[in-house]
Length: 222
Image (cartoon, rainbow, N blue to C red):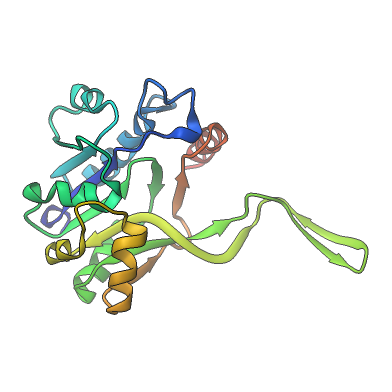
């Protein structure tokens, strides 16, 4: 089933919140233990039979070509946004495809998601529960009765992994963002479905140095 889909990894961001680490190295190429963030994704999808991989790059694009020269490279000459980067790669897309953000590390039941995708035959995005960035305090009057350090909340957020039908490219602008210019349009037309990550899934977005350290701790538990 996996070989029927292509994979596009969005690697064009500058990772401003991770400066100075990202002044000379694109965020997806930052090391977590012994390999770059994006390589965790490449390895994950290759293990599941998806080997037709396109890297949508921008900042320091030559560094990706040097390390992953066996993969298709599609570089932006100017910043196009996440949706624009995918539209820019349209000439390489010849099948249903998966889009991921190049700064996430994850593990989940891909086969189950693919099964759902081929059943709904519409774009399917992954959702994961929001982890509070702060400790949650429960009070009665002026008395603290409980404290939970950064609990998982009963709220769903976009995990940055979406499966698209090839004809979904008609919704992609040449300049724009998935979050503002594609997903809302698909949702209004009732063409966007949700795959909810459940137990035994692992997901983390790398936005700060603290996230890198948190990812290392979480990876040790896998």
